[in-house]
Amino acid sequence: EALVARAQSAGATKGAAQAGPFHGLAMVKLAQEQVPGVYRHLDCLAKATEIAGASHQMLKVQAQAMVTGASAFAQSQGLHVAVAVVDSNGCLVCFERAEGTDLGDSDMAQAKAVCSALHGRSTADFENQVDAGGVSLNVLAMPGIVPIAGGLPVLAAGRLVGAVGCSGAGDKDQAVAEAALQALHRS
Image (cartoon, rainbow, N blue to C red; front, top):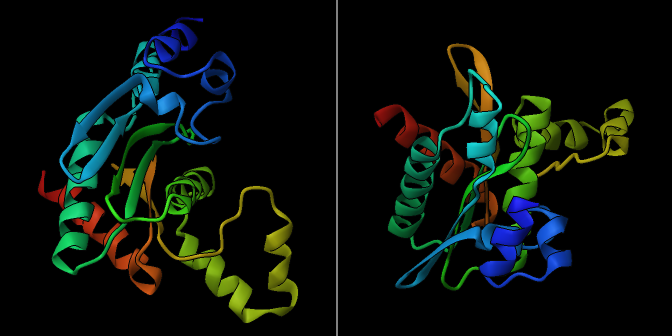
């Protein structure tokens, strides 16, 4: 109820606010900050996880460092990308879409991050499985599988705490996601 009320006060409709972060970007309008040329969205679901007492979680400050690192790398390469960071439950913690990035890449970045978080592995692993063909194609029957490189799990002390997903750079999505992990390790 409180999240829906906050989303409505941020301009989202009640139906869109209840749909959550996986159905467009209405929910992430909760804490929206516009930066010249870039749209940043922060989701308060990480705070809800913290309140619930999770001991291993993706913190907003860590997620922001990852998004900033990925975006800086992409910009240095002349790429326009969307970057999403989710917690271990697949809930959006931080998101950024560079100006000029296709809107569909926003959903794809989130989908890659969620896939990596829920399965604890890189979306490139699933892509390789599909490329192998045969019985490996069974992976396509699993709900939520995104067999496209650009999603990486985030581990802390050997435990899954979240994932990052990048989209918009084609075959360089994986490199952008790796830049996000490198930024996390530097922070």
